[in-house]
Length: 223
Image 1 (spheres, rainbow, N blue to C red):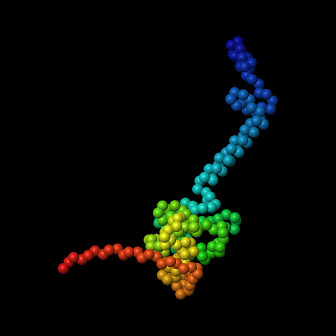
Image 2: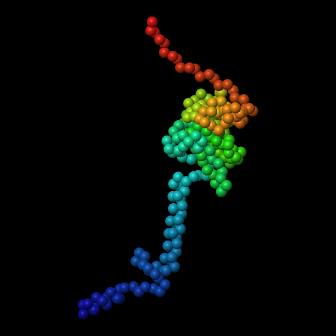
Image 3: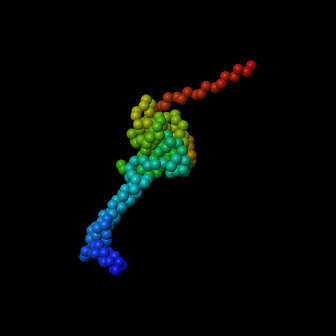
């Protein structure tokens, strides 16, 4: 009798599953269409979250400078490793698929000589970035002012800053200075012939730089 009574009680207390309901959620039956809708919403939310994560994980922003792996990335022109965080450069050029590609350079001189040999130099969408020689921040190379007499990786001797300065060079004068240096000294096996006129140099006059005082030599007191 006891076994029969317990079995009867279980049958009475068990709630029958309504027609069209598929599963139980929080103690209640859930309709099959509701369960499918919840599954779809969860899948859509997961897709959005994954897309946001992928967009924030080092993707190319499509404009502006990109991160440089210092002491690992190589200059596109001379293949030297980028290690000077105050005199490097980047060039972003448009690509046929409507996107863009960034090239890294160890010196603004390498960047401008490399760009001169590519058709993208005349494209308004081409971006040129250079380090501020004091902070390392990336600034627009076309609007920067360049100071001579600095020690740079490829000896073009130019440091950039965003604000004007006495005896500073604008972008056109900077290009003329770089091509003149390359033509006269052929610093690192460049592509310009020293016997030919360098591009842009003939039409742009560069003001003379202030002489850099030579370091004092120690006096010899020996008799």
